Length: 309
Image (cartoon, rainbow, N blue to C red; front, side):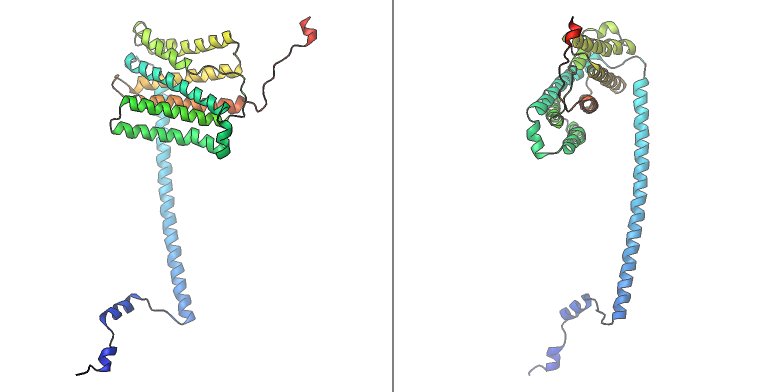
């Protein structure tokens, strides 16, 4: 028998399912207005809730940041004010500052190349603000997290030191390019400071013992004295030279105090202390060049003819 037309026209279960999934559409403007009003109300309430959650999260982050800043401040105060006898073996200080000497020399060479050779090329692609942010913020953070990641998987000492050297060279080039149009009267050889510290701990530590004032005075004081003598002999001694020499000595003192505080054996990794020294060197150099540098070349001061008689 032929099926009846009514049965053929009956909706299938699939058709019923599609109909159930499709929301009913209002055809009355008033009903649509009420619908939109409800949707806007729900949307505004969602925004209010998300805003309240974001505000609460921000307050928590600020409180956490303030707590961390206070903890960091307390730690720095403890490090600087500690006057107890030193428990850190010289065999941990020597390689740290000796490789820091290599890093500082590499950073200085990179800075020179960036300022005098590659500065114009770098400025073709990047502006000064980008260069400063990259050299002073982005690259130090990248280096820090890279070292932490390599230490987590037991990266070798050679691998970490070579990475630090690459970072020092690259950041030096970038920072030097940022100051390629800045003239500076004179500056000390930055690598003399960590080199002197490493030599003191290599040859003078047994005689100096574990007294912290003696170790700091001989190493940091000796480094500052040598830097000033070199400046005097070369005729480079100036306000900027003296200022940078003092800041370099301060970086060395803070690094030593940190090593004395947290490193108790020569088997502990000190790569982050090397990184901290180089980053501080870049900040000090950038600050000094920015404050004391000039966009006009320094001219030789000529003595008047009358004063020569």
